[in-house]
Image 1 (cartoon, rainbow, N blue to C red):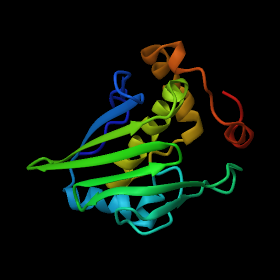
Image 2: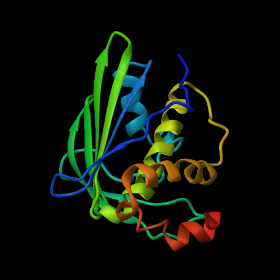
Image 3: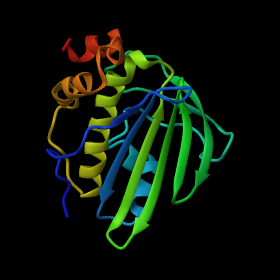
Length: 185
């Protein structure tokens, strides 16, 4: 079953905890081991994740995240918080905490992605970004490319996140370095 990129639901925003929390749930017709490889093998990760991930995937290990050369955003630091192959990967990604939980069943894998944000104002911006990343992940797992310009796709879905999350969750736009590389929305 190929990914239907037009019908992927928007992520949800939970404002009730200590940090705003983005939550996505996606189903893939692939076993957890295949999805795990897409999350952890650098060559597979490059097909969908917005940065490189440099470091050892073991709890407590430091990580470094570098953006592509066309984006002049300095690398971010992080740390591995939890690794339970092939079920759980959690790490600090700059100021945010990213958690991938994989649940296998006869149909494949249910992925639950949560991102604890440091500020509410970037929820719509980052929500749209993770939405596009998950579309790319689905296509990559299916051995395809979306054939889309990720920056243009982000612009397409961003309005839905602003409308869903509200103006207070959309007060921070893309970093200037991103706009310099891809143009203002």
